[in-house]
Image 1 (cartoon, rainbow, N blue to C red):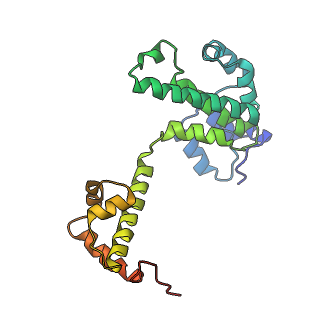
Image 2 (image 1 turned 60 degrees about the vertical axis):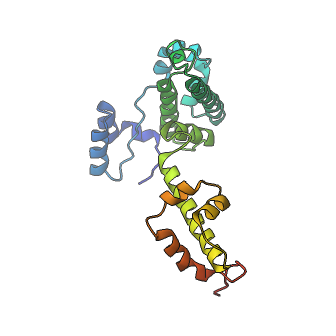
Image 3 (image 1 turned 180 degrees about the horizontal axis):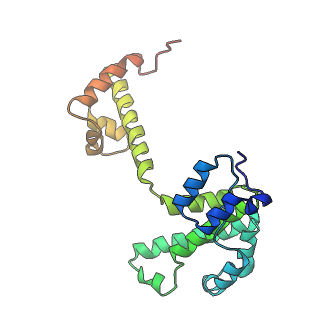
Length: 226
C-alpha cells in the first residue's frame, strides 16, 4: 500500500463509500476489507467551509487567505498559523490560572474547538494534496491539544527514570562504604524523601541498592566489565 494519497484516490469506490459515511466504524470496515486501497480521508470541506467560517476566523485575528494557504498545504502558512495558535493556547492557560475562564465565552480567548478544527483541516490538506510533510510547529500544536504540557504517561516515564536514578545513587553510596538512606538519595537526585519512599515497597530499596552495588568500585566509579 502507498500511504500517501493521490488524485485518483478521490474517485475510487472505497473513498466514495467513506465520504458518504465518514465514521470511524465505516473507515475501519473499508480499510480492513481493502488493505491496499488508497482511501482519501478529507471530509471537512474546502473553500466553501473556510468561507462559511470567515467571521469566526477573523474574530480571532485569522484571515480567510491564511486558511486557504492551509488548505493548499503551504508549509509557511501552516507554521505561522500554528505558532499563533500556540500563543493563543498559552493565553488560555494564563486566563485559566487567573480564574478568568469566562473570557472564552466572551470571545476574548480562542475556543479550543476552533483550534482543533484548524488542526483537522491542516491534517486533511496534507492528505488530499499528497504532500504528507508534517510541519514541526503543527506537531507541537497537536501534542499540546492531545496530551497537554504535563502528559500523564510522560510523568510515569519520568518517575520510572527517577526511581532508577535513586537506586543507582543508593548502590553507589553502598559501594563506597557510606551510609545509605532515602534522605541522602533524595537530596542527590533533587526530590523529597517521601517521593523516593513511594517508589519502593517495604525493604525493596535496600535490596535493589545491594544488588546493584557490585557494579561500582570502592571509589564509586563504575566497574569495567569488558
